[in-house]
Image (cartoon, rainbow, N blue to C red; front, top):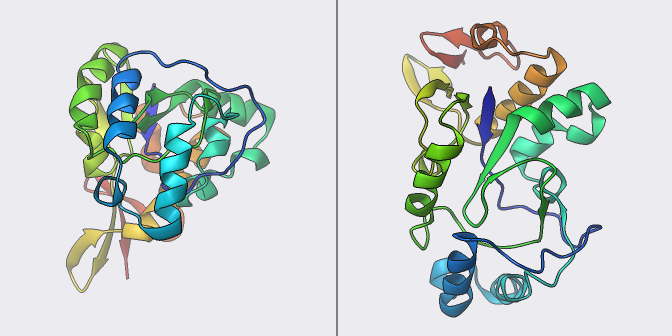
Length: 220
């Protein structure tokens, strides 16, 4: 069983592990195109943030790395709170979770990653990775926690798309920012309960969300 989660825009800086020094395809081709074409439009930032993004992308191979689960620090990862899990629970995360990165494809939690800046909907990254993920996920049962943009980068035969939805006055909408945190809490719950039977995911209840008609629903 594989649990797919998105990366985050928010990343820790620096590193404690050696630099990558080299990239394999298709990461190498994507990186070469990135450093040749990166600008405000491509990276989606401006000013000091743009200057920093350009620099970290250019120096990507020479900068120290961090385990992916430590590099990404966004809302989903705050929900997982990996460092506070037990050794056994962390082992579950390491075995079952894969992060869908625009530059690195399917990333394991302990894979070393440098800081970088690239969104999945740029440079045709989603299309590039779709064929690769199809091979990697061919024999796996997938719990898909990805947003729509990242779902375009993966292909699998067996699995379930898990969405978090809020219903207000009879109208259902994606849970948005709150949905990111609850996704992290869901992954944490899976690890804490050592869930390996997909049917058991429906037992998750937290922050008012519960399984209703094929999704986790919160009525407000």
